[in-house]
Image 1: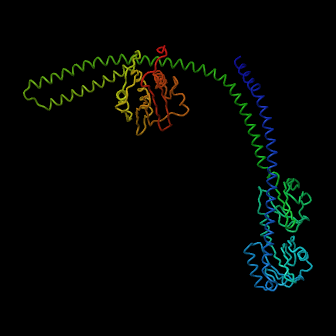
Image 2 (image 1 turned 30 degrees about the horizontal axis):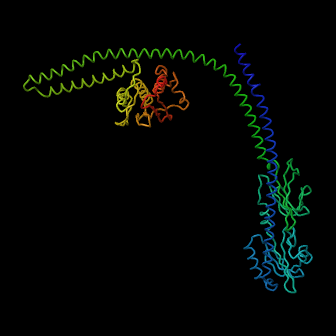
Length: 565
């Protein structure tokens, strides 16, 4: 019957309490993931378009600057001067100092004859009148060619400008370093698979393509490109090895070439895929945690009933131990009375011995002083030990005596040293040093001495127990006033209290001592006494470093409610 009830409770929590919020959570998370995916996709495309646009402007600017370099160089020279080899070589060095993109430099007359040349090839004296670039620069004044082979029979492109000097026209042409220009275009890396390359309006590659394709080869994807002369656009197309690609294209103003940015879709949207995957995993984990917690909660109901029964039996056992503790207190009272009786006899005999010594000294004319001195020393030591035993038995009586609380002035600077004397022998055995910092002018408090004795003896004994077997063991007692309260701090450098026990140390019957060595009533009794006196007790502790108990007691007891009316 009991198991059936537990199963029904578990079923109710899982179905009624979890299904509705779980379904709502799934719907909300699904909508959020959908809109997040759409937004992220738009951002990826926008980013690739922006990169393509920025990079096309950079390449346009590069080509414009190189053409202006040639125009500037030609404007300061005549055909006669620039046709000289040394002058042309100096001019070429100046151009290279401005940009390493220049590969060679040549001068041509109006008929296309190569008048002078600086570079690694033997091109001087050749005629270029029928070449495409020469005819184009004749009409436009400035021309940037597509990549072609020419006389050197290797792919390259040139920048040429026309110079009108009086009634003569001549031309200055520079070949661009293909490797340098390729590096400029390919310098963009987007993700792991992204690449950038240039094609002309016929789909011929003007730079190399990392995914396959050399200069002057046709671009196999050119037929899919969506080209807009006025703006950069993006699109998805092309399948190679079962992979889809995201493209962004932008047109160059200087040459009409098309800059193509290409990236695998899986690479471009990898962050989005990871984010969606993480979201799904979190949703699944969250659902699993919710179901598990509900199951544990339902199962915990049965476990709590069992634990309650166990705790009930433990409490009975602890109450028996508490009763034994009370009996020990009564036995301690009787024992203290029994010890006091022989102490009184010893005190009387001590006084008699003192009188006899005095009589001997008076009746004997010249007694030997050394035996008399030794007898006096022994008698004095007997008196000291009798007083010490008296203080111990008196403290034991006060601890065990059940009397009505009597409020009276208590000077902590006198009261605490008495408590220390009661435990000093135990501290000496454990090699514990007790350091007291007391203000001799401290204001007395109105409190109950017997209850305070129980508080501080408990705290001191606990501190000594925590210091067992530790090197440089010490207890520091510090007393100071704070407004209308006296603070008594008892600190030790002992084993400390584990963090998981900090909230339980003042609970009745909770103890960390081995069985038979503690009832778990000490600190709970201390807590009750301090609260009853209108004060407060707090503790700070660090494991293997030590603990500090701070007892805050009022200077005057709070008025009882019944006395206010």
